[in-house]
Amino acid sequence: MYFGLESGGGESHHLQLNIPYQETWLHRVNPGCKLVIFTSMFLVVILIHNLNSMMYLTMAMMLLLFGTGHPPLRLLLYASPFILVFISTSTGMMLFGKGETTWWKYGIIHITEESFLRGVHLGCRALSMAALGLLFGLTTRPVRLFYSLMQQWRLPPKYAYSFLAAMNLIPILIYEFQTLRHALMIRGAGHQRSKWNVYALLKQYAIPLLAQSIRKAQRIAVAMEAKGFQSENKRTFFYQIGYSHRDLWFAIYFIAAVSGALLLGSTFPIVVHAVDVR
Image 1 (cartoon, rainbow, N blue to C red):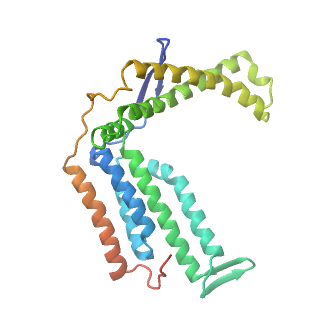
Image 2 (cartoon, rainbow, N blue to C red):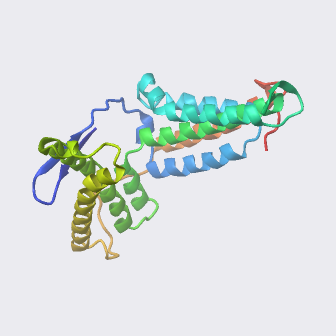
């Protein structure tokens, strides 16, 4: 992944991120269609109250996640914050939940069968949402997403290109932060203040970066106004995003995953005495 960035003064800023991955059919699914399906899946995950169905649906989401073309170890690194969320949400419900069948009790800690199953259910729900978010983030390029929203969902170009311009400012800010930090280190300014003086550090870095951001935002606004983004005339696009058979297979996979999870959850339960979580 490569970012080539040019500032208003003519010099080039290059921030290179080498994240190799193999592009799969998931990357070629229409981004707007993908956004609608994932939003619907978030609602479906919230409305599933059966533990067995939730576990089957989580396995289906995780299976699709390994088809994103990224190595398993990298996927594990990306998912590590969500695994912590899974552990924290599930253990919080397990240790302090309510129930009738007590497994272990010590002080305020009260583990029951019902609280344990509710904790597993909440953990699987959080893991499913995390898998959906990772699927969308790892297989969707922002440029294709906004082009799809403009072409298929009639998003006004002035809003779409504004978001794209704001996203392009992030690598520029990272580059300028690194440049500012190196300049302060060369001048010895960083040794004059304590690292624990938060106000001095904010003043040292935030004010120059904020001033640069305001200047760049003003240049972008003038450039967009000069190129006629305020008019409602029909525009042409460099990228043409459309629908294909991959979108149909993508939708069929999620419909089959939800239907299969509901069916298998009732016919072949993983947990026999699962409680209905509401």
